[in-house]
Image 1 (cartoon, rainbow, N blue to C red):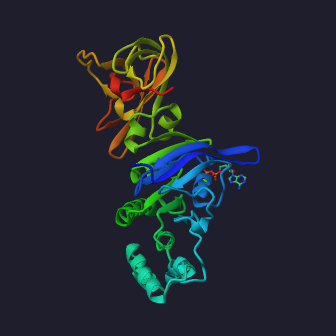
Image 2 (cartoon, helix red, strand yellow):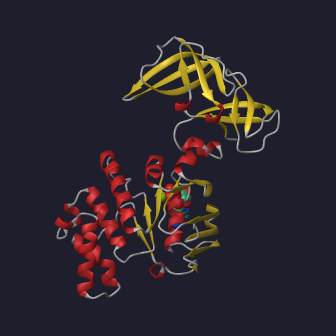
Image 3 (tube, rainbow, N blue to C red):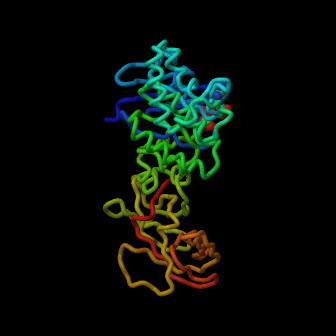
Length: 356
Ligand code: ADP
Ligand code: MG
């Protein structure tokens, strides 16, 4: 059921500029949901609308069946983890975490028990008496998360929480966040511009662009069936080719004239007309290169290619080839043909998609 947190036609402008434009999206209870998009696309603004720090110009927000559109932030069962952590520097870790419950005037014993539970949850039991300045970046982030979770919000909003951490710590925190989410079962709405983070953490992702949502889907669907070129280019690497529709075939197959690649069969999720100009996307790992000409198979596309560059990246190899005047990037596991070699490039129709 994806009707726990419902955003319905929400818009927000600053001056003449609409930074959130008619956004509608729903999230399920306990879901790990990400808002993913380039810097400036309106992610933080949408999060602030959910938290109640901003009021929408239009639209409604529902939480668990209740219209919360006009509720002030402190009356929403929602907490936020900010990018810069926003910890109180003069308070200890324990007091930072306790803050929300003290404001809510909970009893001393209740606060103490909850703080202990939270310290254990984020594995900071040993650090309760320290000041934030005595902690590492990753530990500070965990304090911020514990502080936001202590009063058991129904939704936890996280705004680029790993952006300030170095690569190694960020990767470690991805595992921690996944475990934490599984343990507390709270609905997480996670904002990031980093597709890798969103893909590894989320059950579903909304890809945003200029205030709008382009696609809401599972990471796998976004990767294999992006609805347009923006999503295809934002999630993972892709080759984009322009071509002309030749022939429409059953089951979403379409024959397209592509410069340098002849007339391959590709897939489409949208209605097309013969003669229409289209953009086709093929992932680097969907292209295969071999020295010998493969036997004929009706669903496999084939063309000749010259190897232009080979770059080794640990376990895989990036190969750039040229088919006629068209350049394509491939990812192969294991040894590649040498630069200057002529080989046969193949790809399955199911691995090439019309994206616009
Ligand atoms: P993101 O988090 O995706 O980077 P933001 O939601 O922070 O994007 O910002 C979207 C756009 O709205 C940006 O162009 C930003 O400059 C503008 N913006 C955000 N907050 C305000 C504000 N309070 N007043 C004016 N413009 C703002
Ligand atoms: Mg932001």
